[in-house]
Length: 237
Image (cartoon, helix red, strand yellow):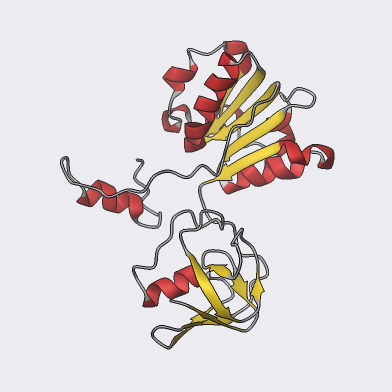
């Protein structure tokens, strides 16, 4: 795992606190970025986003599908798996570090290698994903599959409150923060994983209140990481 000095703290804790032989409890993986069989693909990876993309490329090649890969990053030194990518057909792979090509001006540049009707799989930083989504024609939007490693930005957020029914405490959620961040200051061990709204780890039962849905939460659950309230919410926490 890469150590991110300005991250949320997880990578720093692993690098600074864990030692060889330490036991770590982990849960089985969830796949929110499945690879769907098809005839033609364009893979767009940014930095560490190459991690899920590389096995997809290998699978597409093994199936005899038509594929292309665009791999971006700040510099070659910061881009993992270059040695593995060198084993792939060079005419199908474009290694595109910013130090050599500049920062992509638009998503159209990243999509230029897509064959007609190709499914697009993109994984990387939010600006790259956003650029690809905006550049893809509306008619082809259903052919875009993407995954990002950070939470979506809060757009037009409004203040609301969350009452924690088990303790009776009420938490103020500012317009520019998530309920997960605010509740986490009161309940430090509140569970979460992806912070993108679909993994389900931070979902809690909603007891009352009007919710602005930004997640895939089912039933009366509230996704603390992205869902927001219109006024006052009460949750079973």
